[in-house]
Image (tube, rainbow, N blue to C red; front, top):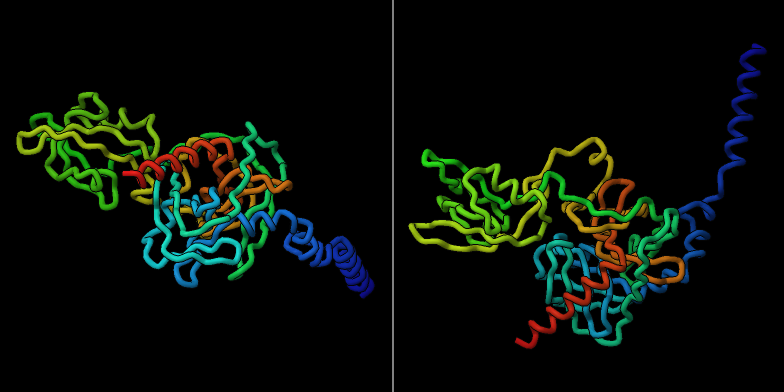
Length: 337
């Protein structure tokens, strides 16, 4: 009896001790007092980030990059443009248009009919120190952005395409040692370029090929979104095509790992980027495309892939400046044609 009473008192003491160490909800990570501390940065999210919706459904976020309505976002999550709208601050704009794309980085530049928007101010440091506080879009209301906070979690680096890059074809070696297209994968760069079943591939990127191993060797150092020239023989005629490379996993999928099953909605394309900044802001694939700010409201990157439950990748501001500049020029050139 005494032993049972002693255990009861000890358990109560431990529970009391844990309770004393637990913060009130207001001061926890997701509490209103913590969010209030980041309110000055939320104003930058409010004015310079975008929410892209289809009806009431949030599809993806965006980053405002010009006063006259250019918004950068993650390309592979947009899907069909029909029915999309873009909300910046509290104004909603219908019928956005894609005016330029960069498949290597998986970004699309949208144009909305707007003026006097507030573009992000990019802060192109060479690299941000581990532990640097960051702020990005969290869940939103119809009119207000909400903050999610985290820190820089790893060195900036290239993230290679998982499984390598592919043309999107199945090949067979025939009895005459010729490399023949046996199958075209739906949605692949090969399909888009116009490769056909029974085409004989004779050159990849200017190099003669006769085996699948030689084709793979030509692709192994290349990135997702790169375009390469393919020379084929079709009905005794030589035809040259430009094929956009896909990531093997992006095109064919992969069996979900245990970590994937615990990660929620991670991005369909989450690898194959020339350089990323990794952080630990909680989110899902719909949170990508939006800006990432430091505590001074400077944009240090744009979220591009939710990799797992504790890893998110952002395009660093230094690379983002070059991407925006190039796509804006492409958009302008296209408008003048």
